[in-house]
Length: 118
Image (cartoon, rainbow, N blue to C red; front, top):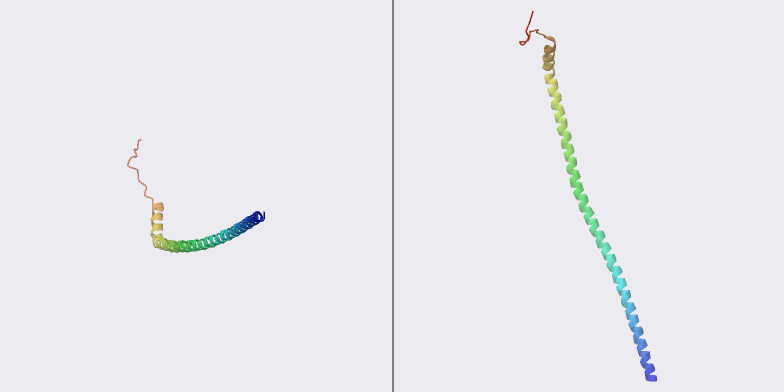
């Protein structure tokens, strides 16, 4: 009986060691999963920061070129306004004379299609 008792004791001890090893493996697996999750989060954050930096650079390039475009448009508008103003001042006198002569100098004539019937 003692040999059976010793055999049972050995089996129980072996079962206990197996359970301990299993628990230890589960703990290592949990730690590894936690570590992998933390590494993934760190990698995601690094990638996100990198993409945001690229986006800001592209946005700066686009917005900077838009700023240059608005400056160019303003310069062209100012130049066009100056050209129109100078043309107005240069041609105003002659146009006023022409307009006044057309309105005030009346030469009454009979239209060529007019038939005078008496």
